[in-house]
Image (tube, rainbow, N blue to C red; front, side, top):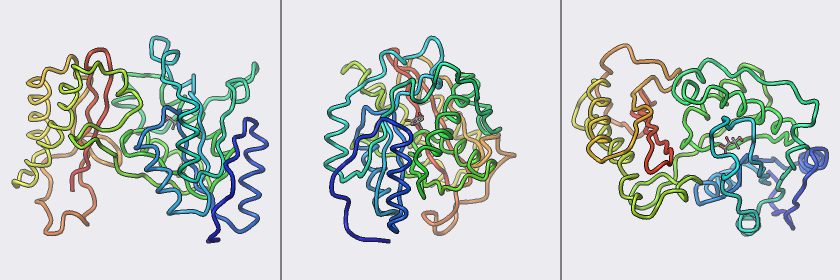
Length: 299
Ligand code: PAF
């Protein structure tokens, strides 16, 4: 990899300019990492940027609130937009290029091609938000064409989204590596999310229920339990006990396919930190009108 950092952050609106920037860096022998975002940046996004900087010479970030991944009654119009702050943070963290298209640059008046998401998109978010992953796959494929980076970094926070993108990249032979970075949390365990800012101050404590429920799974595993149905029941009980308004789902499933596990798992290995995950616990719950997602890989 080349070593000198880029000099100044470019903010580009046109797809052709963004693609030319990436190609220029690559022709100069520099590897480019890409972090797609919808803005409203927080430390979780910045951790992805820093991961990108470890993996490549330059980091490109996109900021685009993608209308096609929101359902008709979802929060597209009120999704937080914090443009000036976002640019300041990205500049501070040494990002080389920000691609920030206007909606009509991405979806012209004759736009009609949509990507059918892979099978792993069907359950969970896919069944609750039926067109969500079609919108995500479509925009991410377009972004990969516009920002033809060497590696893209996504957060584990949106676990199913990361799995959907990995499967799309494999199924369509896309020429990009995908790196999934662990969830960044507040000290009390709340997973960072742009939507946390919707939470009324008095309801933040209830939002910790998701992390408490996932921590219970970790504790049961450490205590020797191999039964995913026992973990699932414990999560649901904890979510009810903590007073979340609605549980959209709380499930323990196969970490690759997100399908139900066939039965009890093998015992905890002697070196769990280096063992591959055997399950993932997924939660989506609503608190004071805010929909929160979290997950935990179980080894
Ligand atoms: O995770 C997000 O912020 C969005 O779903 C993404 C990947 C940027 C696509 O719009």
